[in-house]
Length: 343
Image (tube, rainbow, N blue to C red; front, side, top):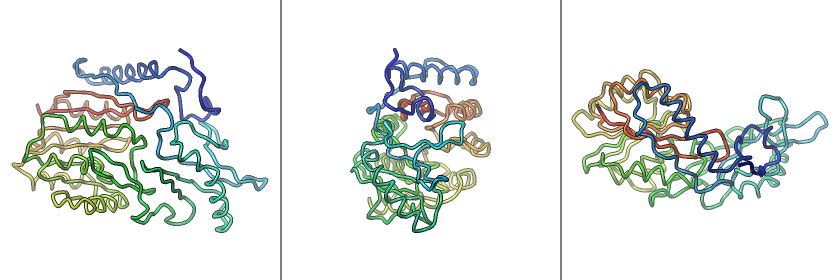
């Protein structure tokens, strides 16, 4: 069923693909595309492992972050907006229907403040980041060195499973706060947890899942390579006084073998939430060869890299559940949680 898009840039911006159809049809398209991709890539995949796509509680005005191009044109006018898909054209943006309303309300002020700062610093262009937390506080950066760095008293936050998680302008964090709790609840409801479990939160970012699920494990070990995310993870751990949670700075493929060796004989549950590019072959090899990890959760923002990685994991892991989550309504993107058990 065709519907009228909310955005005047629909069809040219490239950010949204499904504003012109009903949400029910969008979910059906995404669900089928994921199923077709994974069954076509992973030989012998049982169709019964697929579960219904979990819809977003919020269809519009859900994104807690916008990235905008800010540029001075040849006539000396300051332009702020999105680069249109497959072009070099900058389109001014005064409202984005998938961004949080607090961000939309702030855009006029953002333009004013960015102009003043750019003129003072003699900048001609910049990439702006504007963000908001669940408390509604808005902040931005992108002009000047370390302009995305924030003081702890200004951090954004969201509460997941009763625990407040802080993040910043300069750290990765999931864009749709309204659905995060559903993912954490799905992982926590599994039968894999015991009082002796060591939870490995790999590619942990600021510690979202390691902290949200910390009450389920005797020990939590997080691995993250981004300096700014590690800084926030340490802040989150200290804020909650969680002595059984540790974060290690470095690459998963380099640190995980040593950590697993130290945990030999312990009951481990792991969550991997890698970048869009997916897992390095060495990380897959470590996961396949480790006998200490009895359960594995793979949270992916890219069905393509997910299908490739699952094809490499399936000989040592049983794919038990595939649960898609619509983190990005009205766009082509989809988040997928896969629950795997040791064969």
